[in-house]
Amino acid sequence: MSASPRLLLAAACWPATRLAEAARPGLRVLMYHRVARLEAYDQLTVTPERFEQQMRLLAGRRKVVGLVDGLRALRAGTLSGPAVAVTFDDGYLDNLVEAAPILQRHGIAATVFVTTRFCDQTAAHPRYAPGGPRLHLDWDEVSRLASLPGLEIGSHTLSHPYLPRLSDAQARQEIEASRQCIGERIGREVRALCYPSGDVGEREARMAREAGYEAAVSVSPGLNRTGFDPMLVRRTEVTQRDDERAFALKLDGAFDPLHRILHARRRRRFERERLAER
Ligand SMILES: [Zn+2]
Image (tube, rainbow, N blue to C red; front, top):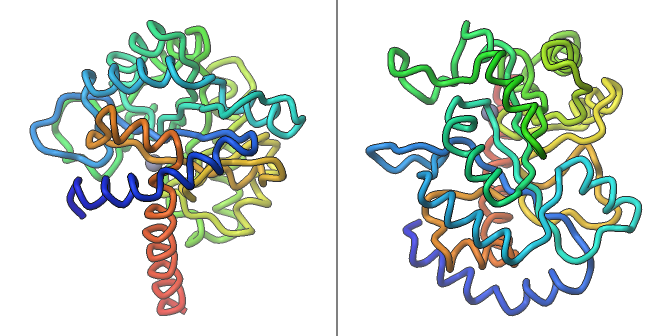
């Protein structure tokens, strides 16, 4: 779908979603991946200029909280107003080089989810062609990121697998051992997990809880409200297309109806593939 029909639909949904957003407290969790300059559009990348623009607008319009602390406050009923948390998946080097200075300048907290083998530099996200510049943070850089005010490191598993396809033992290993490994590397407790590719079933949510995580994030769209499941935290994807107008609409939930339709379609496709494999 091109930018303008998306925007028109969001603008049409905006009066209703804005009212719903204001009616009850909630935490909107933004999902980013990369902040970098790329030659062609990439759904997972925003340029530093766009990111700066979005963070300036965010800091001016919303209370921004750390992911786990914000969810704790939501559960305790002490979260005031609509609040936002910022997350990054996959542990890209540009999170430290490009995103962190912008976050620090605007006083914005963020959680960066790292995959241990990417940090070991023995694997990389398959989306990007091998042989290019180094893609992922190494462990020293993860520690540097963890030492910045408001920055927290979460787990994105050992090898970034599609968890629902793994055996019980393998899935448990990915979820538990990554928490332990990252915790030892950074010398802090790892409180949050991000399911690779965002797809998660009851089994993965149970394993995340049993592994001791306080929160686990998915790609289910929408706002997290009182009574949310901490192992199935919803997130809102932000892209390069989100200029000031689109980003402001996104903060008010105006893209949620469209995202819910796209997400349901994606889940049905995954289910069909899983049934076909049996
Ligand atoms: Zn990922």
